[in-house]
Amino acid sequence: MPLQPTRRFPVSLLPSAFSTPSTILPAMASLSLAAGLLLTPAALHGQCAPSVDAPPPPSTAAAPSDEGPILHDGQTLKVNVNLVDVYFSVRDKGGFVTSLSKDSCQIAEDKTPQTIKRLTLEKNLPLTIGILLDTSGSQEHVLPLEQDAGSRFLREVITPKDEAFLISFDVNVDELADFTNSPRELTRAINKASINEASSSAGVPGIGGGPFPTSNPRGTLLYDAIHLASTEKLQTQAGRKVIIVLTDGQDQGSQYRIKDAIEAAQKANVIVYPILIADRAMYASYGEIYMGSGAMSQIAEQTGGRVINVGNNGRKLDDAFDQIQDELRSQYIASYTPTNKTADGKFRKIEMDCGKGLKIQARKGYYAVPGGDDPTGNQ
Image 1 (cartoon, rainbow, N blue to C red):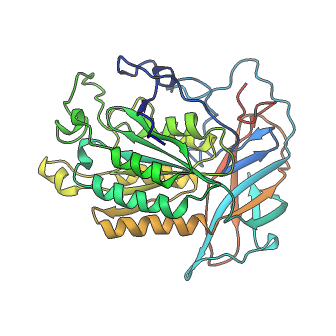
Image 2 (image 1 turned 90 degrees about the horizontal axis):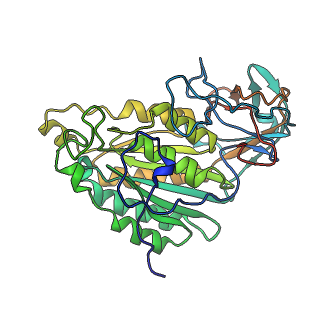
């Protein structure tokens, strides 16, 4: 089957301030339900907040706003809440714990104890993976490592019931492969990725390169890539959903902010795993200080993932993919009916405890967004 041509995310999916190419391909269609933190049936869509202390309301606008996201006027809020599903993994000093039962853990929502209806290990639940590949100039020397390790990971993880897609990001956000369960097609797509000359010609990505506004130069559209992958590819997918970002972690020129990227991933119930792979010698040669880990740690923590820092070491990169693979095979799902059944669009903080000495990795909560007949919660 021939590889599909690269598709660029169309202007209709980006904020109005976004500068786009003159040739725009048709918009990509979204597919079916949700994962990560899922509310079933189609009544309430669970997300978690960018900030535990002061969570903002959910965004329904097409573009980010300094005033923060709001609900549409006239939105119906009276719906029934049936079930909240929380994906999580548990570790002790020896590694992943895979023997927990329903009585092993407690869940509180906004400090109110909840009754867990079921808790099961979900290693065989279908998986949808988005690979986001940084092809900006800063990745020129590490891109071959990313391609080799990413291809191996996909060959080992993807089964006939799973799907994956591939997106590259630099001065643009491009889809290199649509949903497929073919490791061979995914490998062909990942090997097709190349460094964008518009960003590499200027050295450190986005600085002084191309015909873009100097007040917000485009070079590494990392936050835009996470936002678009979440909203346009994963929002309505069913099962477990994961984004793996291969990047140095430094954004340059995105129109969406980090909080918008986090919120989009939360609304799509996506777990984000940033793998930090950086050519630090390149940054030093340009007199720049590498500072990519802080933002990626924030995204990972808020979505239930974690950051793995591999430098520019191919062996460490292989090990990072192995860690993610093991984690995906060791995930639980805990389900409960919340005592607060009001779909008011507000953030509900979730706290979990499975016993002393056990570290839980899960998202921080969800938004009580009304759903109606639309399982995504959109009106």
